[in-house]
Each structure stands twice: as C-alpha cells, then as structure tokens.
Amino acid sequence: MWTLEIEPSGPAPVAAAPGQFNMLTAFGVGEAAISLSGDPAEPGRLVHTIRAVGPVSRALAQLRPGAALGLRGPFGAGWPMAEAAGRDVVIMAGGLGLAPLRTAIHRLLTERARYGQVLVLYGARSPADILFRRELETWRRRLDVEIEVTVDHAAVSDWRGHVGVVTTLLGRASFDPANTVALVCGPEIMMRFSAAALADAGVRAEATYLSMERNMKCAIGLCGHCQFGPVFICRDGPVFRYDRIAALLRHKEL
Amino acid sequence: MDNQSVLTAAGLQALFDSLRRRGYRIVGPKVRDGAIVYDDIEGVPDLPQGWTDEQAPGRYRLARRDDEALFGYAIGPHSWKAFLHPSVQRLWKSRREGEEVAITPEPPSAERFAFIGVRACELKAIAVQDQVFLGGAHVDAHYRARREGAFVVAVNCAEAGGTCFCVSMKSGPRVDAGYDLALTEIMDGGEHRFVVEAGSAGGGEVLAELPGRAATEGDLAAAEAVVERTAASMGRQMRSDDLHELLLANLEHPRWDEVADRCLTCGNCTMVCPTCFCTSVEDSSDLAGVESSRSRRWDSCFTMDFTHVPSGSVRASARSRYRQWMTHKLATWIDQFGTSGCVGCGRCLTWCPVGIDITEEVRAIRDNPMERGGGT
Image 1: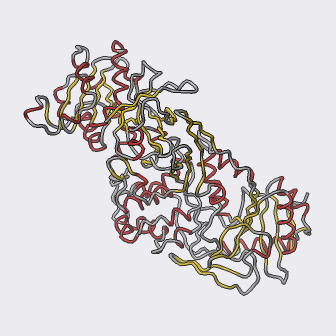
Image 2: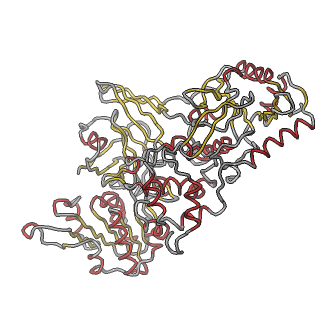
Image 3: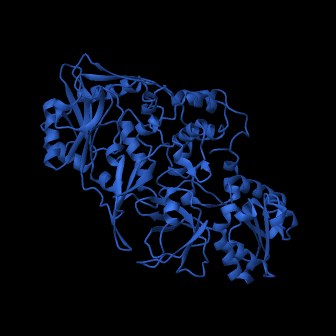
C-alpha cells in the first residue's frame, strides 16, 4: 500500500467530490481506476492510495518523484455530503475501503460543525493491514469524532483493540439511527452485511450509501465492463444509495 | 424527383460508379472463406451472385441458388459494426521527453463508407449502436465520424435465414428507416430487377442519376410480395414484449446452469452480434519506453478478464457470464438505452460452436418460470 500525490500540469483540475475516482495511466503499461483519497480542502494535490497488485498499479508504484503519469477525471457520483449535513454520519470501512472514505472523513472533520455525531468504524484483516494508522490515531484523540477499529484476527501480543468483523462495532456505537447517513465501502460481502446491520440498527436504506467496485476501462459508460445489472458503476456510481441496488446485491456474480 | 424507380443489374453497376465518383469507399457482400462477408467491392461482379446461405444453430453453409440473385442470402458472420466501430481503434500516441510526456489524440477517421446490402435488422443494429455511442453524455468521436460520413444502401430481405427472427424483434424484414437507398431484388416475371427507393436527400440525388425507369404498380406489388414472403418464413420466433420482466425475475433460474454446461464461453456470439459494443484498452510502447500508444479493441463479457478486480473475477462462472450476456442483450439494455439490444439477426445462434439458441433459452425460462420473489 502506498499513497501517490499528483501535482497537475496543464489546465487546473476539476475539483473532485469525496468518493469520486480518477483514471491513472502509467505510460506504456495501461490505465486503472483509482479513488481519490486526499483532503478535499487541498484541491491542488490529488492524492490516491493504491495497492500495487496489477501491472498498472505496480508501474505507478515504481514511478520516481517528478515522473509524469496520465490522469483523466474526476469521474462518478461521490458521497452525499450535502445530505449528511445536520445529521449523524456513520462511516463503515472494510480493508482498502477506507481509502475512498478518507476524503469524506476529511471533509466531515473540516466542516465538523455542520454534522451531528461522526463515527468511523473500520475493520481490517490484521493490525498490519490497517491503513492510515497514524491518521486514525490523530483523529482518535479528537473528542468530536468516534473512531473504532477492529481486526479479523491478531496475535494477543500486538493488538489490544477489538477483534471481529466491522459490524460488531455498530452495536457499541451511539448515534440516532433515524437521523443518520451511513457511508459504507469495502469488499462486497462486507458491504452487504454492513448494510443489513445498519438496517437492523434502524438506519433507513435510503440513508445508506455504498461504493461499488468493478473493472473499468473507460469511466464514461461506453466500454461495458462495469455493468451491474442495469447500471454502469462508473457513470451511475460508484456511490449508490443502498435501496437502489439492494435487489441487485442479492445476486452473486451479477 | 420520383423516389421509386426500377434498375437492372447494369443500373446497379451505375450506382457503384456514382458512389465511387462521390469519394465513397464501397463495402459490400462477397464470397470469401466459405462465407458471405463484408469487404471492399468494386461492383456487381463482386457480389455473391447465385449464392445463398443455409443456417441453423451452430451451422452455416454456402449453397448455390437456382437463380442468379445478387442478394439471395440472409446474413453472414460480419456486421457493419466492423466498419463503424472497428475491432481495433487507436485512441492516442504519447512521446516522452525527459520527465514530460506529450499526448497526441488519434484524429477521427475521415473515411466515408458506402455500405451495400444492409438488411433491416442491420439498420436497427446501427440505430442501437447510435444510441450507445451518440445518445449519451459522452459521444464517441470515432464512431460519429464514420457514422456521419456513411451512405447506406439497404436491401429488403428476399430470403429468411434458418436462424432469423427479426419479425419477433420488430426489426425487419422490411427496411423502414435509416437508409439512403433501399433495394428490393425481384427475380420473377422474367426480368431481374431492383425496385429502388430513396430514403434521404442524398439518396434521392444519387438515384436521380441512375439509368432507371419509373416503378409501375406491378413492380411495387412484386416488391411488396418479396418482403411479405420473407416475413412469413422466419426461421425462429421469440416473444419479445415481456423479456425485461421475465428475465430479471428469473436471474436464479436453473436454466442458467443448464446452458452453462453447454456454453464454451468462447465469445463468438459477442463478436458476431451487430450491437455488442464492449471494448477494452491496450497500451503498448517501444523498447526504450519513449513512445507509447493506447488502442481500444472489442472485448467480450464471456472472458474472465472482463470483470477482473484485485480480488478476482466478479463473474467467474460460465453461468454468470452467459446470464450477463443474455439478460443485458434482452433486458437491461432497455434500462440503459431505451431499446432491446437484440435485433433478431440470428448470428449468435448460427456462429455458436455448440448451437445455443437464444430463442430456445428464453422459451425454456418462459415455459417454467421461477416463483415470484426469486428475482429482483
């Protein structure tokens, strides 16, 4: 895992909304969709958190400081920040899903007075897999935000926090479910369980948002790769209101 | 200007000559590799005169006709998307100078095609791809350039193929829109002739130059009879008015497992389908890494790579990939583009190596639907 900061050359970049993504090119290798994970208050710096798993992300990881890369974007529908104003905000992240939510968290903390309770519930596989660990520690020291982290498994010697899936954190959290907006991002199965747990806790499906991941080649609804039933994830998402895709999520491999 | 006239085969050659004078690159049917394909043609002698095609699921054979018809076949493996939405399209080139990289976009093609022998189902398929590439927020400049420059000579089908079902999809066999000229080939009455109708101002201009005679009542009646005979002899039928609800309510139907046992996930159906539009991109570079380029190429939802994300392929099973193709084609396409993605051309039946018949797959689900609540 590593974080890439891009300084735009040429025309000033279009301001990105939390939850949107860019298409990044390693010249001669290819292009990949990467969510923006930076602080939206610093629009001049485009920050992407990338796991080097494929040829493109590996090539991006090998770029030296100052090297050129290709960027198209921002694309897609982001998190409903305007709708969240005046309400409690529950953020549930699983694994790498914290990266696309980091921009939203920064926004919430920057405009802290606009929102009710802010809770960040984060589940990682193991302590070593926790993203943005130092930042989480910093946020944790604030009194106006609740940060809870859990891991699937850990040796007793190196972890004194919660153990278990992220949904177990929901029961301990204090918020007003009838006046809450929930933002969820992580592996699909984690999002399905989280959305169900949020519903059990009394958060309406209409106030629960998920960010979906699919293969994307064009980001403008023309290449066909990111179809999810009738929707194109790149164009109609990646952030969706849960009630609009709940029926689709019931089908495996759709 | 009379917009209907009658041409002989010699008159048809004059059409080719006129189109060439106007600077068109003429593409039409010819016999090659045991099939009728679309390729550059010079004139009437290149047309598949006296040939027809015998088609069934998984089967295509050329056969001699007992007449000298020029358009006496149904359709082959090619469709016009090979020209409007080519299988490989370069998007840009880049050149690195030090730490700077300059990108040069590929300009849209200036080539103007004249398509000869476009069938009704193919006109509908072009209209469907227009919706995909021109109808949304993002217009594809490469498609638009080729599309706007094209001159379309359509042909009313005189022969329904064994896998044809355009009547069911309301896309044929009569051409009704989207052409510059429409031909109906008439073989009876001793005179081999073509009733020609102009469908655009440009078509009217060309037609006015051709050595034809005015169409008589008899010509028009004979042309009408050709289309009616074809409509009555469709190789396949498929009820199409309720496919959206039917398929989306049956996403977990056991038939998907059954068809997956036969499907080779080869992707042939997506390659021959005149509306399938999915693409991938490929980057390449020289050995020094100075120059690179990106190309778009046809892709298929039948591959594992198509849905690959870091955690694996979303649609790993053959069941899910066939289901995606068929439900997209017949159902979710309507949500996305306001029209079915199927035009009833039958290519996916004919060119499926194991002869999977989409009309039969729909029937199997329709005859034994899941209880309500099983779908979305």
